[in-house]
Length: 151
Picture 1 (tube, one colour):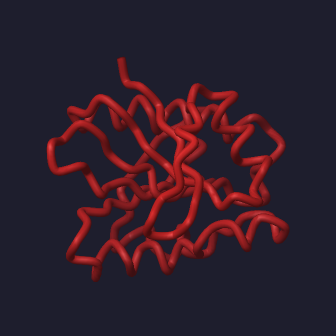
Picture 2 (picture 1 turned 135 degrees about the vertical axis):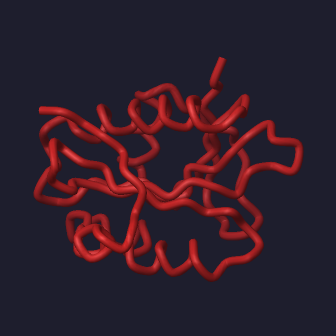
Picture 3 (picture 1 turned 180 degrees about the vertical axis):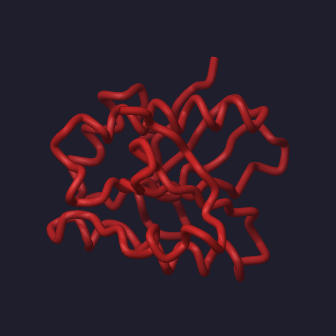
């Protein structure tokens, strides 16, 4: 099985929009369709949306962007694996692919993300994969912030 990260385009946006987390995770992440619309219409941030593929099958989604003004960090704003692909170790594998992809395409020192405070499984997942709890809250949405050092 080959993992790849592909831009959301006119050819694949419907398949990516149809991906959904497990129902228990829905309160913790926006729908992919909303994220794609945000990437198009939010002029304040430079969001980019990508499908996460196993071979040629869409299995997940990421949205990156909102780079700092000094280019020292970038946000991994959304990361999800479709419920049908969970429980196979793909979350960790795709997170490492996303980190590699960001390192290869953006000259930043850190990758930042935030998690809804009640989402304990996500916090443990990100810490397991090298993100550090900043013990700070994002003032925009009240989410807890985590950082991954690219060095």
